[in-house]
Image (cartoon, rainbow, N blue to C red; front, side, top):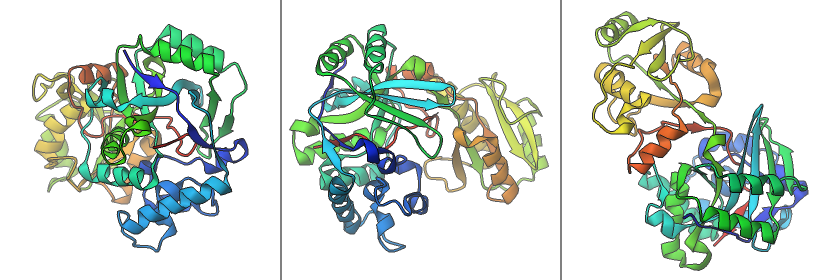
Amino acid sequence: MSVVRPFRALRPSRESAAAVSSVPYDVVNTEEARTLAAGNPLSFLHVTRSEIDLPDGTDPYSAQVYETARQNLAALRDRAPLVEDEPSLYFYRLRMGAHEQTGVAGCFSLDEYDRDLIKKHERTRRDKEDDRTRHMVELRAQTGVVFLTYKASETVDRLARAVTAAEPIYDFRADDGIQHTIWRAAPHEATAVVDAFRAIPALYIADGHHRAASAARARATVGGGEADAFIAVAFPDDQVHILPYNRTVKDLAGRTPTQLLAALRDRVPVRPGSATPAGKGKVSMFVDGTWHEIDLSASAPADALRASALDVALLQHHVLEPLLAVGDVRTDKRIDFVGGARGAKALEDAVRSGRAAVAFSMHPVTIDDLMSIADEGGIMPPKSTWFEPKLRDGLLIHTI
């Protein structure tokens, strides 16, 4: 049984929705956020990354940043304007090229989250939790949306088709080419969705572990009521689109490219390859201007856990740690991660520019892998999945 409930969304007017909406706060750094928001006083980045409105060098975790975010949200209420709906559920559709996915936007139970009935596959970092927890407490609002998934339900799919046959409240194409369309369910439709979710055995966090964890911590300060739930969009598993999360390493740990290739061949099959891995168990490596295929399909995992058999774990166990001296990828400054949406060119550019010495292009993890690992109570290696397309911030805000 899964619980979803309607909520009073704070949201922009139809006319200002495209201008208000912004990329998620955690996919850009301060300078990128400042560039994206330049010349647009309605951009929600003024709320989620409010340091962009303060002098260069401002500590992004200073009290001034959170106070500025609070002031900016208050100003946006009048400027956009932001309006508050009666308690509602929504259907949110993302379209990227030929790919389309439609999810239920609503509030989900933090009690279920705390009891692991909403399943997780990723560890969170305390510093990132601290930031979003304080942001929620200071603003009395959840401004970032969690991305959930669940085993597809024909009943929910049927309700989605009915609701999305009507006129949407928003329908626009963002600067990155992603089409965002949102419908508000009628009260009787929302009741049917709530009932349908009771038959869904489990929800899984796909993206947004830090947002969910921060919401759980914020309610300890704010209290119950609206703070007992977190805002999310739940997509059926057969519509979710996962891209690889690729790796670059700044140096070869004292080896030349020739020496690295020789050391690799002593461990695993290596042959000429392309930028796209041929399938599960294969990793494409770009070094010294050439792509190679590393075959890890017969390589033993570090242990019997399902997560240890993922390609990213095999690469870490057989290549990154023993040959390139990359230990804990959460803290090692020599490794960087490149979302699959940026393509092979971003990997090649990193190596050719000298920012990295070697790049690894991964085969994407499947949603079945994610769900099975979460069902086991397992934890996936850091930076295993890149979900695309991404939800926008600022279209649906949950006040607490």
